[in-house]
View 1 (cartoon, rainbow, N blue to C red):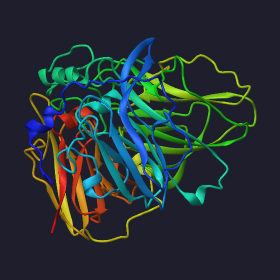
View 2 (view 1 turned 180 degrees about the vertical axis):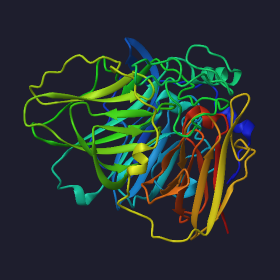
View 3 (view 1 turned 135 degrees about the vertical axis):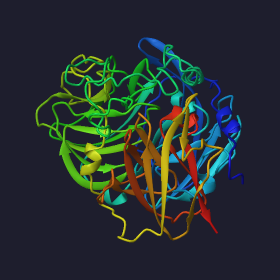
View 4 (view 1 turned 180 degrees about the horizontal axis):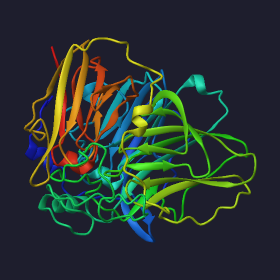
Length: 499
């Protein structure tokens, strides 16, 4: 097995994506579990409608058209992945902890899956949770090569709640490879802001309601009086639309619910480059899990959700007839998507694609409050690593001074407790994802606490976050920024277990 991937080969996978055999828009998910025999999953093409235009995108569907997979904790993940597009692909099972050689990272754990070929996967599913799957090959994830991957807890089968699964996406009609090329040139063309070190000021404007413009306040981790420090900025890619289950708010997904019913939202931020605020509007919910792992419940109406993170929120619906929208608002802007929960006779009103006021930046306010329901056993770390995040000209994103392919893997040994501190020296926040493990957030800005157990954590601009995990899954594991274009720009390293 190849353990390292050259930067040239890694970046070559960011070529333009193509597809064949476009299909009609498909329902997102059905309540069917993975069978005892292998379930077939097809990476293929389909057509959706966005802003009145047909869009060719990718998808991960079963032969009967259902997108995604549902399994049960304690059983096995037996899936046959078929590649039905006209280029290589490879799927990562985000949130699961498979053997390293089944993790779906080209050149690190598996070779890319050629067109018209198949891989067979078979590994245990020990833990329930809201997970997802997506391409880890090139920029296919931007073309919606992703789907939910829900693992249910059999102990919860008797609970009286309706399950609603929603995937959020940022959508562009542009070729993602063109966007990446524009970022590398540092241009301001349609679909991308500047690349390199000049991305413009942060579109904050939450107080005034403006979506763009000069920064309204300094980021949390910037010095209050240092005018020489570059301002924090939120976005370096612009989008044509934001989607919830492939739909905009012009024609949102509607889930029929019962009066006075209980609903469990499983929300997945599958965006390539967008952090969202989840806004429950007139409802209040209880956050019960993040990244598929239980937390001590937190009540609220608005919750931060960074790229690749998941939120499980329980709602107690009013006993009257009605319709209740749930929004996902892009941080720093008014642009939003969402869906509707409606009773049989509830009146669904037309919803605008912009909020009244721009959302604040997604920061770590929620992260500081989270406490896991599944903490690590207290233990002194056996090994500590520090990863410093920097950016070089040409849209090159680095960890400890090296882009992927020129990186030094992080050494760990089976049985160790490992801490990793991310130190962000850039003007953007970065959602950092570790494959094959769950970790606990144990410090923010050097302040220690016993936080949530996750697989993806947002590291703020000019800030730091420390995570801890047990090295209990030997192999070679990717560790990277889940902003797709930052990863394509080199922001990835890997764990390497020592023998």
